[in-house]
Length: 428
Image (cartoon, rainbow, N blue to C red; front, side):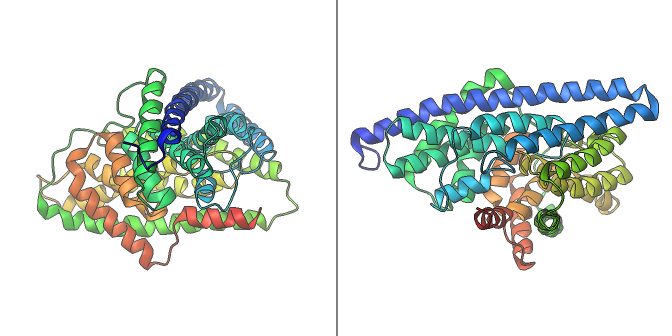
């Protein structure tokens, strides 16, 4: 019996998916390992310069500005290297664009490491998804697969990249079916399963086996709380729609500055982010440390939550406009955790003692804001559940993500990667 009726060619495609998945695990796991150490170095720099007074605060500004400029200068030399890359993976699936060149992988790795490692508000998942797709495309060529299998391998290994980025194998599979392709094809599902399985297994010695963002212990909320989470989903959907609009508006505003060199613009953005980092490191970076703190159940006052939310809401689109390699997912999850935590703070005077705690609202906020921006509710639910281990919150997650998706649609907001893909195609 053959899968999809392709006989030996079908078997060769699965072997290629397994081998490419191993490569994605090594590259993606190595990228995460490097970013973890870059975070440590950045923390050491902030500690060292903090003792120097106000003059010392200029050092993080200079470092982040230099990092943003260097990453932009590197990425601009290779088509599709700036930005997330997920929109390019989607365009290749739709046969609107060709896979990237062989230089895409090293440029995405080095440029993403410099940009995210220097503190820009960008996520690791975009570069890893794009690198995974590039590895899949190369495996398809070297395996002499047919055009359709090669295209599937490109997409499947992009999903494996997302799985490695967040240690979320099911999330990688749902991402491929819901966000990238919008379809469920048995052969594509099987190729993605093979790729994600091998990729996550190979990456674990580099990144560890635990949850990426473990949440404080939560119990299944009572059914009477579902309307509360529906309301939270509505507000998260509105926030997500506004965030999508700001991402695109910031890019368009930068387009209206043609006399400002791209690298100089990136340096200016980096300097601003560096100043925020010198003020408080939680305001910058991908957001994992902030999300982890919020998922532990507290730690920030209402005023601090509002400040972090407002600053990161603006700093994320601004960092993306620097035209360096970097994604949107991780900052979105941090923004959602902030919104969920703030929602709990605002609602807590009205809630009875047996109501869900702040950690539960933070988890639901992560998935709901993600849904409002990306418009992929199943991906958001599965991804957040795998990252936090909060499977008891399935019903609140479903309610909130449903409300977020409907709200963003009613507001006329287009899924952000649809807009970014169309923008990419218009500029090429």
